[in-house]
Length: 69
Image 1 (cartoon, helix red, strand yellow):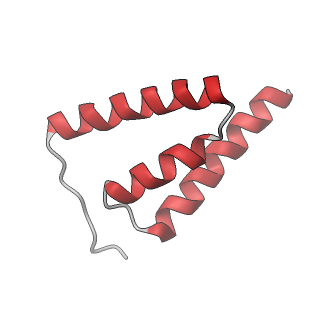
Image 2 (image 1 turned 90 degrees about the horizontal axis):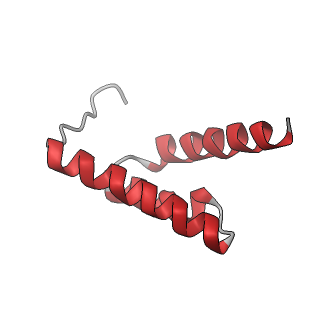
C-alpha cells in the first residue's frame, strides 16, 4: 500500500478543488450527503476504495459532530 502515489498536475488539482466546491454547494442545496457526490470523484482521481471510504467517513463524522455541538 505504500507503493502507490499520484502525481497530479496543478491544473488537475485546481479542477478537483473546484469540483469539490461545486459538489458541496449543490449537495447542500439539494440536501444530499457529501459522500454521495465526492465518493465517485475520489474514485475518478485514482484513490483506492480502501482509502476513499475511511476518508469520506471521517469527513461526514467531523461535519456531523460540528453541527451537533
